[in-house]
Length: 315
Image (cartoon, rainbow, N blue to C red; front, top):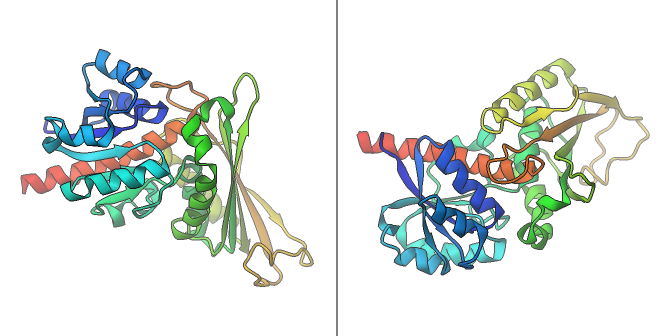
């Protein structure tokens, strides 16, 4: 079966986990090159042991690599700042770029929500780990009723937050908050990330809170359950911790600071959804579900892009 060649830029935790997924579970995409800047990194060493071509001189080294012309998809798992330079370097070559940083250069994509409308985009952005985990739920509620406000709290094990994640905390909250509105469909949004230092490390937990008016509770529960099942197809460790909860707010309880100054009047409800994301442990521990959902979502995007490219080649 024909497969589309891909390169992964970034030999840290995310890039290495993505490489393992491409080797083990991908159907339409194969990894051709893993790119880093530290020749002694564990990721590059592991790639060499697995027979994957490596580059230790960054994106310029990738462009000069003999396999570069065959590569159609490039994953970037570096950092928001590095991604901007990588995009400029790759722009003349027409590669399809999947951005796993919070740089937000291309359109935000969450596979279960809006991949179809951006399948032909030259570059797509995977939002953040918190966004991949929670925006499908915001969209599930928004599919049933208007969401006046949505707030997500992503709690991840401190040990799963490497230097790249820590350096991009501000971008994480800004990018996720923006995507809650643009992709999730909420009128207003807010994102919070918590680095949990507990030992032993806890797996990723996510809380999604939305404000809605007079909700159809059973319709929302069904929409959320269906969405969780859809995400779990490519992230098997993605699950609800308990049933969706509904709380009617006191009519006198002020929410105008959350809804952009608009008084939504009586009948306002808080909808609470509690999630857990366990990693597949392909490269990283199972508690690093925050990294697993990013690489799994990026792979899902690549698989659908590759399927489209292969179908076009047949025609």
